[in-house]
Image (cartoon, rainbow, N blue to C red):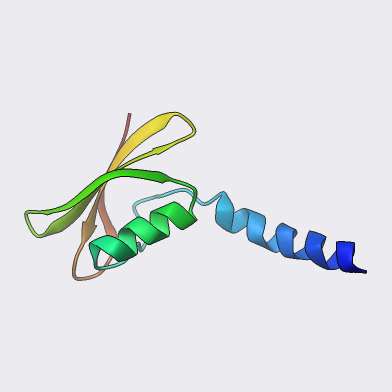
Length: 83
């Protein structure tokens, strides 16, 4: 019974762990919120700062680097670059 419960929890958690950042993603309105959300999604945050009224974060996932700009008002992704 215990194994069944653990498998059920993992099955529901897996989609959240595999989440990808898109232009529709809401990450948060503060630097710590954005860092936490990206970390929860499986990204490694390398650098983050406020720039021109936006939150700018550089991240890595699966050996791919990316950069995201997030609105401090809505928390929504404004610009996304994958390298």
